[in-house]
Length: 397
Length: 174
Image (cartoon, rainbow over all chains, first blue to last red; front, side, top):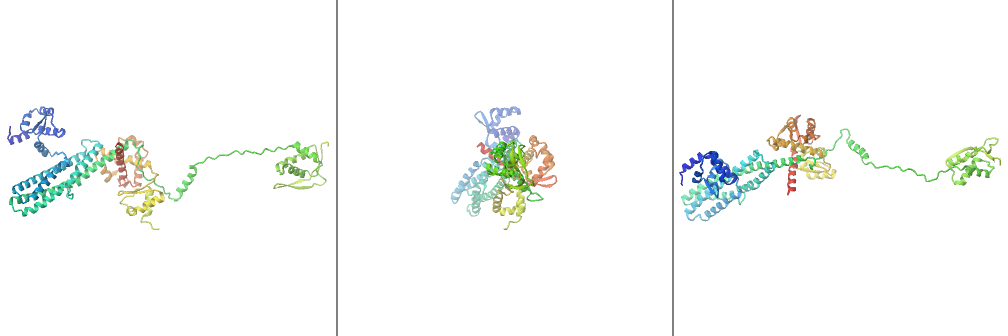
């Protein structure tokens, strides 16, 4: 059934709410299932399924449906809800535009009808290319702003992934396409077309062709301006914005990870400040030197002195016998000194005094002489002044 | 022997643990004499001099780990709380002035309250005031009045650390 154009447009207007819901489902799921269609129709209590198919708005795919591309694009355009397209999709225009331009250049003096058709087609391709770029920039900006506002409460890690994907897969390649300084870019090709059409709008001998070149030239001026604007949006607005989202999300993810276990993470090294004392620059070092002494305490051991020499005991009996055998002794202290020298080779003061105790023995007969006489005896460094005592008798002997 | 201008101040500032910022008069001197100062600090003290476009600082093996950790906790909580309010934490930290009361508000109402209370330098208002003064001494913030301050470009040192955490984690996962 071929419907009247006005009928279709009126139908679209009247049931736009339902069509919009179908558009959203298809945008999300790529297809409208039989159940989804029925659900929407039941919800709105209006069965327009047959009209949707009759007016060729819906196309049946197996048991499901999809909105035909022309209507889909129309709704998309009206709603300005474009999905970002991969730059590969846009790249196809590079081939078609370059090919048409090459044929125009090669056959500039050929069949005018074909030349004019090619010029019209080229203008159409350029328009389509530009519209696609514009749609893509708008959609990327919308998506980026939405990501920035984070209405959908997307996790930081997911934000990093999305931002990185858009930068690497969409924005940078799209920017390459629009980079006029890049010899292989479409923008560069458009610049060549602009120069070529500028020349031929003046020199071409066929009037129709001249008009077409003229149209093409002015279209090129506008497209080049617009592309430059799109390129600026990409580089000055979109790229920094999305870069910031990415950095922000990375930093926040890092902080959240850190805060999960802040005392187990290695932290960046910051300098341990050195203190300066106001009263003396050396105080710190002096104090530190002082404390350093106590820092490394070494164990100190005291060894008990072991006296290897046997303790000397005065053998009174032995020396009494010696004295008895030497009787009479004219000078007792000299005898003591001499006896010790004989016995030990060296006289020690302790031994000397021990030996002199024999003079106090009760059994000894001492004679001090009529007049006291004194002698000097040297024992090591000590000089003793001793009286002269004569021992004449011991006991009853 | 001739030394560059402001040599004494450069040494004193760096040795006291300060970050030297691009707007300081000592920064261009360091930048112009990067090689000789790097050698000077290495040969004299065995310290590494790091010069970036945002700050200059010294690195030694004796790092003040506690302070570094507390600064990380402070900036991490602040970033998290600002973001939770729906504001752009990076822009605010980079360009805005903060009031001490505002910081108090973020910290007393933070969901990281247990971590805050267990941290000596951040646990209460007085500790946080002292801590802010420490940040000021180190040139990580600049006090604009008694109870207002701005972060300096030295804060990026810690932001870079947060980025490194994610990089390290990703590398580990791969």
